[in-house]
Length: 99
Image 1 (tube, helix red, strand yellow):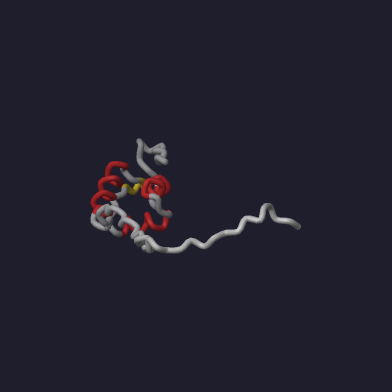
Image 2 (cartoon, helix red, strand yellow; image 1 turned 60 degrees about the horizontal axis):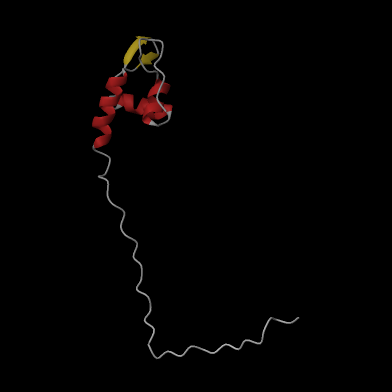
């Protein structure tokens, strides 16, 4: 889902950034303290430039994401060997069960 640009010239709100980054609002505040660029419009009102958020996210998260690895093939045990001279038990067919 793509964030809706706010009414402030295409700037994103805190909720827009949270939606884009797929995190809770509190986590966006943590990112602000870690250096996520923002603009202060008035006291207590901040907005984000989408291109700055995307750039910051690429730089910040690209180091923490491990390279994609192919999943290991499931180890399937070899079937048990059956000796060629194995005897197959005889079955007795007396017809349909009675009862």
